[in-house]
Image (cartoon, rainbow, N blue to C red):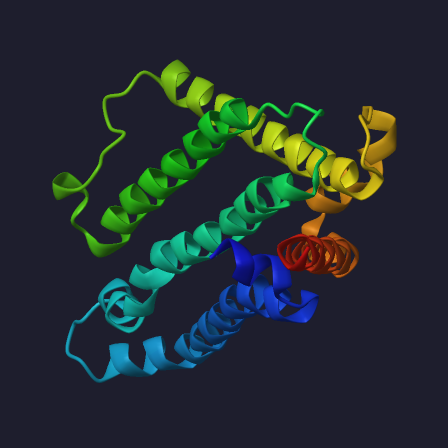
Length: 216
């Protein structure tokens, strides 16, 4: 999986991360426009069937929204993981990166978001009582979990940006050196077009170095 992300082109990752959710949203939008005319007509011809029932019967595809989001999150986090872990072989051995800390903080928001989407999926499907539920949890715990997950995501961006720049410059770097990469990862829908070609080059260079060392 790591090699796939490291050698994938920017446009391929863009389609994977944004193309699928965007296509789903466009489909849902067209369906909503269609319901604006469908619901009143169906109401007149269904002897007392309410608008709510008509809309609910035709919005079944919203049940899939949380699972589309889970696919998106897994792809997005997979990109971060691949850059952070895969580029370590480009970093000189005398430079120590806090990889274990990254791994721990990486999985916290991933698990949190997936569980949250499962809960939302339960609400959409009307089966929330049988799924992961936040009902009854103190509000401050939910807020703290959310804020801590945001902190973990920002730390992951920090670590990935630092890994990219360290692998590129082959020396210890400060935030000023990789601030550009950090903000490009933050606004990834633009940054992916700049970050990914660098990642492709680093991946190619690492493979070339490995092959040359094997020959020698």
